[in-house]
Structure formats: C-alpha cells, structure tokens
Length: 162
Image (cartoon, rainbow, N blue to C red; front, side, top):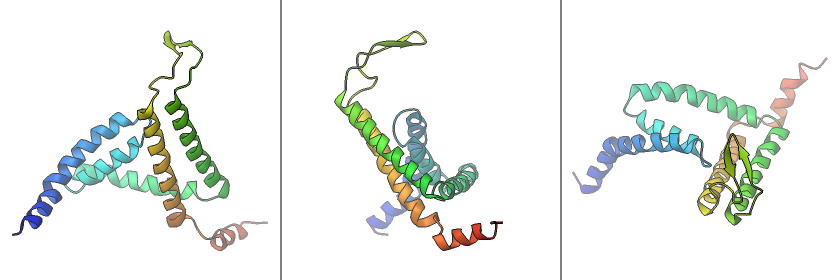
C-alpha cells in the first residue's frame, strides 16, 4: 500500500470525521456572527453523515428543506432581484464595517453603543463579504439547477387562467 493510498484512506475515515466534528461547533458559533455559519454547520453534518446514522437523519430533512427553499427563491424574477439586493447589502455593510465610521452614542436595554460600530474592523468586513460571495454563489447555483424554463412556468400557469 502506497503512502498516498494510506493518506487517502485515513482522510476518508478519520480525517473527514475529525473535520466534521470541528466544523459543527464552528458553524454553531458562527450562526449569530456575520458569516456563513449555516453552510459550515451543514458541511460538518455532511462529513459526519458518512460515519453516523444520527447525522444522516439530521441531514436528509435539511437537504429537502434547502432544495424547496432554493426552488421557491428562484421561482420569480422579483425574488431573484431581492436576493441580489441582499448580496449588494452585505457588500455595502462590509465596507461600512471596514471603514469604521463614528456613530451616535445610544443605549439598548442598558447596554451602551457608540461612538464606534460594535466589532468594527476588517474581520467583520471579511465575514460579511464571505457571506455575500456564498450567497451569490448559492443564488447562481439555484438559478442554474432549480429555475424552470419560462415555457414550463408559463404552461403551469396557463391552465389555471380563467
């Protein structure tokens, strides 16, 4: 058995399991922070699903829900444009957090904010831009994979017309 074959075998079993166990908690931590936390969590579950039945059981309904959400999100042009607006919004927010403008001071539930943005800096900006790239990539993939051609959509609505 060659060294390359041994490394490949190790990664298929141990490496993918270790990576999956690392990605799951990292994804959970990233959920409230700006960044693609859901994608990291699902990637960890996908790796663990190779080894554990419980992870497969969690992944199957997530996959089904993701496909339905993707089909719904690209069903009409306004939904696609709204998603693109979300990508532009994330990029703009990234620039705002990167330049660290001063903001008015204010309190929310007794917690003071200002004169700087919370967590301002390149780290948050990079997280927002990563989210924008991931969102754009998923949008393009969903359009290519799940958007029905216009003629099929038109036929589906034609029979419903009075």
